Image 1 (tube, rainbow, N blue to C red):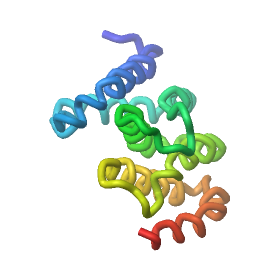
Image 2: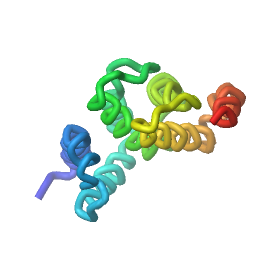
Image 3: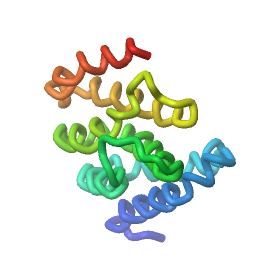
Image 4: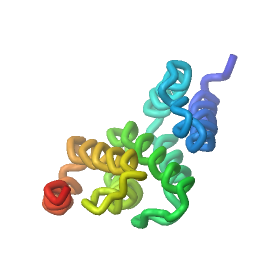
Length: 156
């Protein structure tokens, strides 16, 4: 039994553990297992109920260098985990966090010169950008990013 006030913290710990295992789990496709999905989506669902915790988690998971595709495969894998996870919290994140952390982290993966070994990050970046653009409180952010996004989309 976990006291109610500890539930978001426990869910955050679960996602941090899954992040730390992301390189292995993605390589062996363990992220397709129903048990993995259950833990991941349950944690996401719990944290989504607490916007302050969601924002704190996004800040913890963010890439070390935002706006750059890392050279090391492990760092690219962590970027993909970040983008996939952040996508689920876009509706509860404030616009500034969505722009500064999420949109800027996705930006380098949106280009047409994406190598095949980072295709999952490419897909995650496009998914998170679309999520940002459809959330009503991000209308100003969407308006400022839509032209650049459309241009990059048609380059592909």
